Length: 106
Image (tube, rainbow, N blue to C red; front, side, top):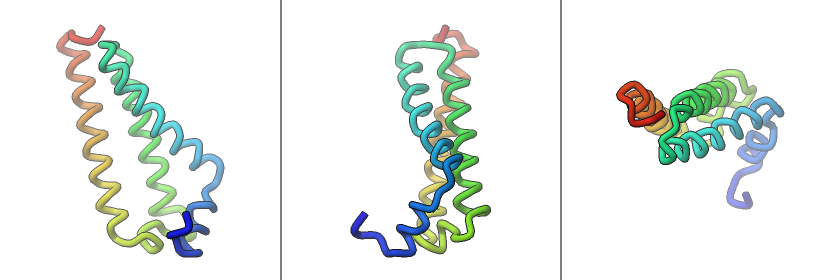
């Protein structure tokens, strides 16, 4: 954290509790959902869907609701980075749903 500017630290430490909770759900549900794919469980798709929804909630706060916008503090790269994460997460959700529909996950 010592490499961040005071404005960046203020942004990251200023998250409300609900944003921290949404971030934790996004991260841990994606890990859990991925493990469920490996375990061939049909629950992987809804768990990964919840993770994606939590990512959307977190991003809405970071880019729209926060008094300090993430892209103003971190730079335009924050938008690109977030878009790439969403594309990957959406692809994994679609993949899990297709596996459930085709039958390999039960």
